[in-house]
Picture (cartoon, one colour):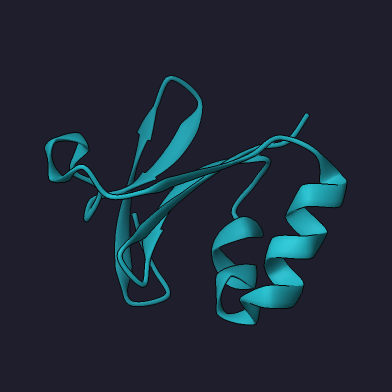
Length: 71
């Protein structure tokens, strides 16, 4: 699914950026609470459209993997 100039695939209920490569060994930021999500989005407003895809999204941004899993 294209979104925001990126492509995402649905894996086990999570939207995953096709740019994500687990072998790339990029730093990973796990976002598991609404408070964490809000803080990340304040620090990086460009992530907001991707976080809006749903509560479970993995996106690569500025050579860092952001894994949103907010329930």
